[in-house]
Length: 452
Image (cartoon, rainbow, N blue to C red):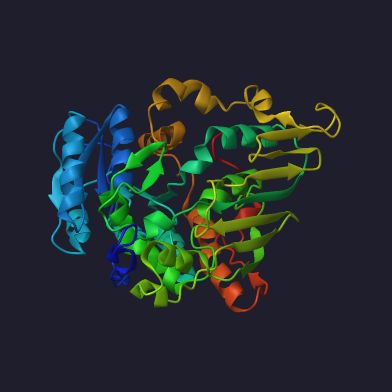
């Protein structure tokens, strides 16, 4: 059958995340012998290879070891590293806990985690407890409130710097909008809008035999989509909430100074009925296909409203089961104007013509962030329009200069917690759910630090 394969419903085994009592080890110094920063990678799919591109494109870095449970991604990553003329790293594989052996055997300045979602927190916790000074974890960083607290507690206890690798925070328009916010162009912040609106039906049901989806304008091989379908689709079967909030909420959170003078205090979420995945199965495989009998729990559109301590509201939308063009739906609105990325609109009272939109390029050219001005030529060839390179450059700069992580454990916890809290709210008919204060009151005095 075309378009649907068994990979979409394979269940990834969960590991035992309990490592209570593991002592924090002494932190290593940056670099060793040759002075290069030592990187390790856990999870070697296509996302890992993009990170490797950018780590090696920045002078003074090397890859010590890589780890994966599957030989195919490991071999492709080794060939990728060879094409970049970099030394071959050590390889750890053979079991779901091979990464623990890697952490025990090697010394790292940074570990990058690009594994399936349910492994993000256990692996990040293990790396921090092993004494790795900086840990970069892909999004979302956690799936449950317990995992969010684990990230915070272990980072605080070990003093390892956890950095959530939310690349959209480094998108050029998002950074220009943040620059405008900080310069007061939009006035006092009132409201934000964002989301993850992306037709993922092909990815969720790819059987590994076809070219089935596009990324950065290029067709990607079915086997790469297949690897993601092995674990991602199961979340649509058993969960109902905003399961992937950070691409949207990260940039908005920076504009609202979340965890740094402001915080999320409560949310309410509602979900539509689930229709898109069942329809996709029937349209591609027929009404008698076994998957047509599955009850997909994830509502096609999940809408979450968040209230902030300083009064602002934020609407976050999750929509991955519907036929639609890609959008993150950004809206940054204050007392004096706003930016809306759908349509590329900016309006600033007193400078724009009354009741008429300006093209955002007119404003963003003037308020382009300095990081983009400086690094544009090097970022041009990187993934996702260059923002992957800008993100890694900022992270590497923090590692080399022993600075705090650009997007720390409190950001990772607050942004990722939207998933678990939205599931609770949806299950309670949209009831308001209190948001934990992961900073335990520190947000009041913490100062903005991202991209300054």
